[in-house]
Length: 216
Image (cartoon, rainbow, N blue to C red; front, side, top):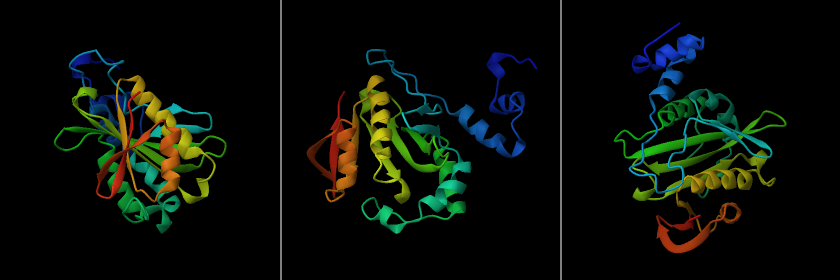
């Protein structure tokens, strides 16, 4: 199968890779998500690929797609997960709808890029949580990358959140981003994750949450 590179589309890629039709729309969505092009190359490599995964010592970090909802919805049903971060458990259907929006990787107005990844324990294959990064689409000069993380209750207490958050913030800072997170002052477990990720608390408070920063 041949095609003019200037006319390659997500549908063409899906057919080329023999992707089942029921998954084709996810391929099209990912293909159509263009990484931002930096105004200059004065900061790091300048680009983080939101459609790429990576590995840590114990985790496979996968770009989020709607299909992940089926296995993550049961893992994220414990109401205690939302005590400090807000929200509530979602059904698999509602979570798939949310993940479909996030998998576009860009806000509707184009001002933000959305990076969302699933944490999979390599030893067992179980999906145990997510990490995310919200980035100004104009690049690091426009503001910091805001990160967050959540690990299901059965996966807590084993350092997975620290491992994932550190790897994410490392990748962002290597690409020239400063990094920020907002954490409830009583959420001590999340504060320990932020410290492990190289972040320091600041005096700034937003909606009752303290701002944590990492600049490099």
